[in-house]
Length: 265
Image (cartoon, rainbow, N blue to C red; front, side, top):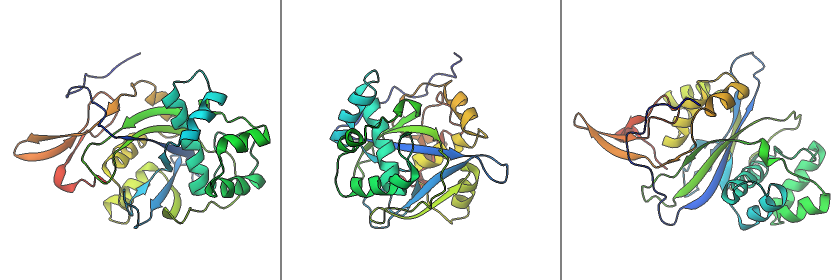
């Protein structure tokens, strides 16, 4: 396997108190024949973290996610498995789209979503239905944990998956989000450049990486060339200017941004 140049900074260390989390890049073919579209959600302005920003679906890992991972994918690393479960669960809660759950029909997804939002455990819902979730189909491609002492510090694992066929309308969970849309990575970056949407530093870097590939299959192949190392951005002074930087060996086409332009959280 070919590796790029070594990192330009020492290996990242997980900050104390970091909250395990997961996010999911869901990709579908475009009707126009262009690059795959990605499901994006806009966070509520009332949220403590990334208020008003456009992000991929996802959220924190719950204790029950570890139980589900042990039951459905015992061969996976425990933290990785639980994060995959969280990505599937949070996506269903936040958008109404069921991914990685082959036994869940569209007609049943709304009921399961309501049950999860009402506090029912995913492990109980799966057991009652006799279903299995296919979290091994999620493609891991990144892990980020910025350490800038924001309201919360999240240790977020990034996964990608091809969108399943669906015909029902997707809707946001209004307590956390205000808008949902499909757009290619390039389109979302263009919207951000025009000031139509706001993206935080990790989302922008990953959209730039996603924009290198035309579809889910090519992105999966591309991302497999690089390790999933922990990324903790650092500030570096270059030519009298402060830059927020990430390692250069992980497949990102842009590895720094002027610190005065960065939105971190």
